[in-house]
Length: 385
Image (cartoon, rainbow, N blue to C red; front, side):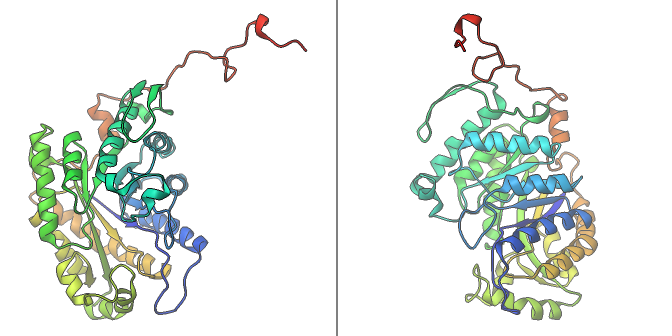
């Protein structure tokens, strides 16, 4: 099972110090967190995609490319790649380029995002959000799976004899998780393709998560990809830990109370009782998250939100030390107990290549042309000097 961290890249004022980091500081902090995640033994780092203040990660491939060059084992992912407002052609090419640079250590979580105004910014209609997600992913899948694509649809200009370059590494496209909190159509889409389903349930009660994952599992089996318990499931989470529960609550309370996402609403105690947010000792976090599979079954990926609400970088790195040193090693053992042998691990590039029958060079050998200079012009066509 994979454990890791994800970030939404928010620029939030620290309510204790009163200081707001600069964009440069926040971007550098996110890369520092990624490197430290590998150092403490975590498996995955994922970044969100936003195109508006107070967020900074507008270019996930740029950030993940930099992190790829500095790491060796860390799986790189996105906590949301906007399948609705990004051009599928650009997604296909950008992320396969990153796949090559990262030697396969890449997958994506596709989603519609949580910022309504992003649709008109990129010339789209939010009322077509689900339809955009369905059509754009169908095209993305073809761009990766087929060397030459002829395509026409509702939301994009047609393609004629188009080849996305570079081609997927070893002939195998990056693995895709479809992320959704509340939309059954997206769970259905994930099941139809046999892809993963990531339920970022950080603001929702476990009963809702249970229903969404159960729907995805049923439909995964319906489409013939395997039994329901073999479906590929990921969950979100958020924690804050100190040696004692009292210390954790005392330190985190001002950040909770002032956080843009949940401050000034339910109390921290109410919120932790109803959602996966766990503020307490490492053992309390272990107990809470070891019980997740009682609700959703054996699953493949657990990501934690650690760097939100204005927490200073020093504190976040301390949290990663606790997560990697005290919590995840125990959770790995707990999650392995009683796990059926037929339940797969999270897909990796190596496992996908093996399932495809081995590595294949997908390089396109294009015919020479007279546009790029790959083929010289005939003498008769040259302009006299």
